[in-house]
Image (tube, rainbow, N blue to C red):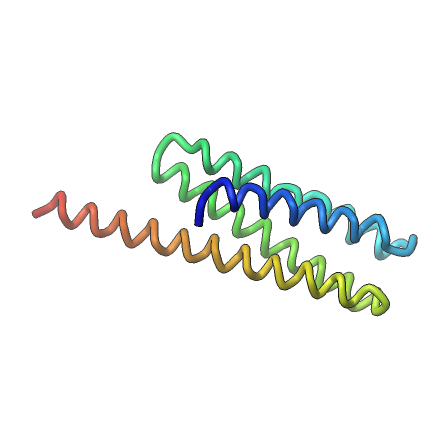
Length: 126
């Protein structure tokens, strides 16, 4: 997938989650979960942008691993919010779906990069 498209998707994802958070009823659980969610969901886009400016393949891979972790954390807090905000289940599910799609793209990229690096090392050895 084109890096510019993924930059736009990760930014749109952070915005979508921000809008969800604005709509959450005010209570202690939503406050604490949404504070965490703001941090990890916005880190997805920020860390992906940093990955695109990586100085080496190893640096790119390390930064993508951070994106993977932040996406996983985002999904966790969305799942928690879903349990306590049944009226918002549809919008939470939409965000879970996009998060899982982004996670699949990132994991696939990580796997591809690792395979390419292994192949490159094999070629260099021969």
